[in-house]
Image 1 (spheres, rainbow, N blue to C red):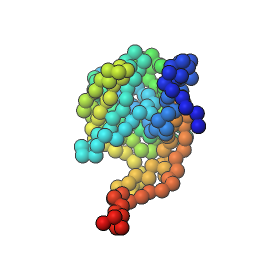
Image 2: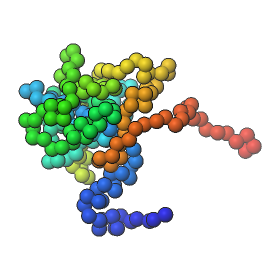
Image 3: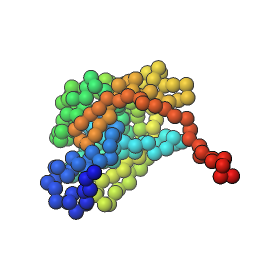
Image 4: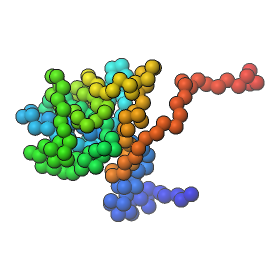
Length: 210
């Protein structure tokens, strides 16, 4: 097994180093975040840093890159307080990835990558119509991360759209049946398959030690 020190990593070419570190954390969620600005201009971007933060209240967080690199999603969420998160599936993974391109602010990424914006009731932000699992959020707080000028964006889940057949008896969502994809690094996407599901783990007591 190779031993790689941080001193060695610092000597690597920038993009090689970024690819390596991006892959180190393993498989991540791959989702599209839909927003609009105050004038109703839609925006769509792919994110791989989405994380569950709590169930009561239902909180989901994601990391937004520094504003100089990715300003549109965060500025729209600040302006309207609303956004959607949409799972990615094989039928449109190429279009989803294309949304990571740095389009000018006046460009509607839904149109640019040929995905359809879907508006539901009074929810301001657009969903991705092609997505089979999607949910709307209301902004809770934005936490600056000083170490690298990124932001942890935390939102309350307000509305969820999915096929009822994906929900198992105990509330577990069989996302693999929807074809939800995952990713590694910044440009590799994978299909998902359930290997096992276990019950709630409890400490194993060694009776001989009593």
